Image 1 (tube, one colour):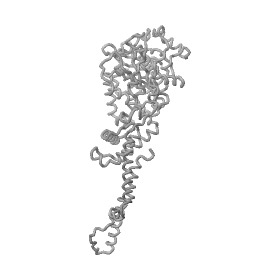
Image 2 (image 1 turned 30 degrees about the vertical axis):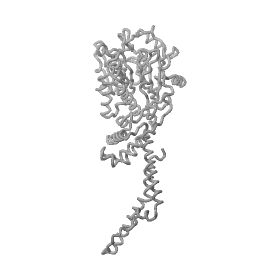
Image 3 (image 1 turned 60 degrees about the vertical axis):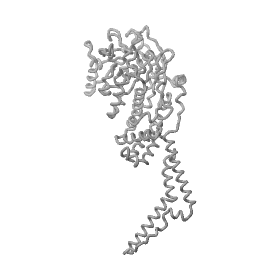
Image 4 (image 1 turned 90 degrees about the horizontal axis):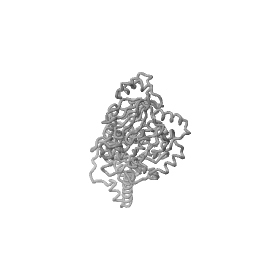
Length: 516
């Protein structure tokens, strides 16, 4: 069933009709893998990754459960499902060509434990995605946009979270002057952003930001044998912070969109991107973010990138985006409630009719490893919905051992490149230097003040009389109150312009970075 321009997905036999293929020249028209938990979505994703890799197409996918790490090892006849795999291969007519095989894999992990560290910078993430990540209000997002604008104008590099925290502190101190130009900058909004940064730090999100940042070309490796590298993001721990997971994948997709050149309609994709648990991207997402995803999905195919959303229900994906997903694999959907039945009916209506198949009934009845499929055909026309038996995987089904993972990491094409974190001069260091300079100037002025002659110090402290005659008040009591008030004012002026005042200035500026 191997063809040089198509990926065999499954089917075959009297019960399932002809074989089903993903055409490489239409693989960048995006796709959908949907179905309830336990119906075989992960295995389908695995066999698609194998197929694209064989065709020399690099793949990026997230491993939510840890099972997809098995792509790095060949399957085995000792596996408990070996007999089932052979039976399925025979049923769909590929038993003669079916063989176990390992695929080139690069493991990535935001936390740097189960893969190479993957990072970006605060500046590259941008205020829109950061606002989504930190769950900011519209007013707080506005303050964050001001912070980014000021950083750009003053040449303050934003690499990690301590750069952003330092910038926000400085923004709060200079808010009165900046508000005249950029609009209101409230202390409450800055405080709320700082609290969200603290929550993000406590969840381990600081590992995402810093250098060396991920270089996109490291996702496009092709082996000397012509196999596309399969990049697997370890996401089993990352899923504990679903908003961080979704925001990172959306950032990566946006970076690909903005960085890659236009290629039109290539013979095969430059990269295929699988977005697992896609519903996390759209849950409570603001309209601006959904519009951004729609724009990327609509235009990134011209950059040679195919995006495949994996989710439990097609209803999880907004209709405008769903309409752009040309290649579809629908596993079984449950229909026990009125809402489930409505979702099932809507899912069936998104397929091209097949006069020999009741699509709605078939989606409800297909078993594990079966699906209703529809792939783009010649001239981009959707194929008729077809009941399909998904082919068995060639790589190992299930996770690899820690030792096997370590071996794969050691032989990776990016081994050692991202392991050591860098800390270049950035906003934190620049603002810290400014604060230290201001503190040093205040201290020097204080020392000069102490060395000045007593008469000059007295003059500076405003303790000399101006020579103006003081008129006697008609009331002795009011005169005494006036004398007392004047004396208090003079004393405060002395303290603010003298030693104590300068210590206050130094304390405010120098204390910004205390403990860093």
